[in-house]
Length: 288
Image (tube, rainbow, N blue to C red; front, side, top):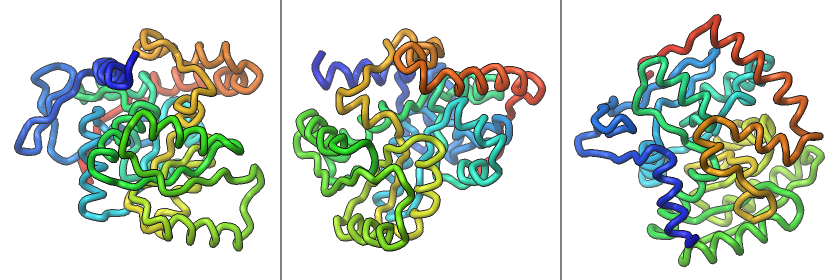
């Protein structure tokens, strides 16, 4: 499959969303009109952005063009449930520029709340869509995260896939917290690169905390926490088949690939999420 064919397949899987003029969007229902201002769906207190892929791409484009500083969380059941135990993480999700529906349960919650235009905005797919536009418009990217050697491998894969893509820096942080001096050094390094996009490939909640702590210190308009997308697009870890992603079964696929790392997460979070969402149904919030 070519890069162009895969991108087309990703867009179809995301709902085939398109944008119309006048600030209105057409969602997966075909003629579903959505507000020009992005709403959020309250999912157990976490404000999930009521968006589809095209809406996310246009909002990120606007931030870059207008030089607005924001961070993007890509969130599924894991992020929502971790936020139930951590008020700081809950606030980070709710203060984001976008908190995208990374998993199908977030999309289903949005539909139940009345946001029928919502479709999945999966971190790895969002990364490809934004980088496709970055290559076209000359936006610069910095890669922050991944194990040693992963950012370099990822950069090579991405520049091969998107001719003209500008990756102006990369850094694989140590597993320990950075010292204040190291943190100042990496901030200066990212700012010196003049990056427009900072891609953060850490795990949840590390990447969300890092973005929230650095959004006011970095000159880049957009920080995006995309987690496992680094390993996926570097070719180190396989993604679930598209049919499993569409049916909300990606968690099962990932469990079979990394059982030691993930079994506790899914056993702890998934049943609890179902019980809580039945007790507290999702609801659509008005834009702030």
